[in-house]
Image 1: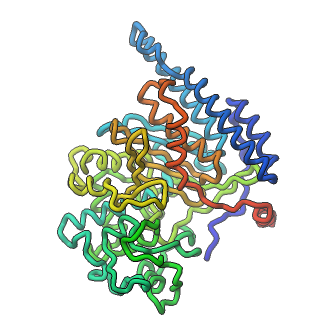
Image 2: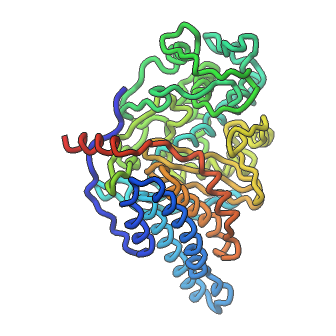
Length: 480
């Protein structure tokens, strides 16, 4: 396994002095990291304090006076003031969570209503993020893979409840239930009885410009079938296919392989011809070599008040999490899935397929979300939200829309969500994006909505197991 951690410390210091409260809290919090009990107390205090702070600050960016402004010039001025305050607030939340860069977009109905970038996507070369900056988007990739499968389904190549063994060159069976078939629908809905991704498989990293030999076949066969070189029984659950939901990335690796087998094209070529090009997604690819690498955000990890960059890496199971794109490009896809499969005059999926993808396939209590076909679904008191989150080394992403008002948001950052404070800041940015087109009405910010969004982002957190030994080893690696 090639490590994707680059032992080069970023020497650029934060220039954000706009929010003394957040900086003060951070400076008080970080020295306490060694004491977990104190850290938890401080963490809870921060959440309570920031909620109060948000309500008071949001009142100052609420552009109520736009409504009463008597002239277009006054209205434009008020909007400019509100936009500046909004930007400052986003940057303050980024600072709280140590996000080097953030790019975001808002979709309303069938249009890209707003997009922007903040911070530095490459700290070493002082490159500023924009809405065109390209990010590794992790598990949002699954929505693209599902779309490719559904396109082939629409063309009559298979039925969703067909046994995938009819198409694979090897026999895929849970050895605990050898007579139970595994279907396309089960793989799409994480119901195949595949279990935890084995360490060093899904998260194995290799330099992004290299091509990997042996994947998807025979590596998938060797990993999933008894007697295979890489086979471990832990890859399967004890229950039968269709018995419960278990989020298994390797299932989407299998779906990517099935796209290749059925279409007789490489997975990248199929997606480019049938999804990316029809949707004008020119800065989107599963291959780093197909993109302008100088416009790709560098992933970072933040340790002991310092930023550490990763190299641009790929993951072996790329149909599950290896897509790179910009928020502008992905907004075209989001518009299509919000509008019955249509972007402008191009239809990539039928209405029936889109509805099926956004429908809960199997009720499950395993996670804090349900799953359709390639899409996460959150049912809360505030309504239904559909989309997907994504998290990897130096990556946190989200693409969702609310069925109640046809507003969607996309947000990418080049740092993982590592703790509760990171998740809080990420969630508040998401909430602000949804509120931006609604005039920032303070009455709409309630604790219930805040914590519903935080719960929806719980799956983003990546267990980095940050401890003193790990920190010391990284510093030793850096210092040679």
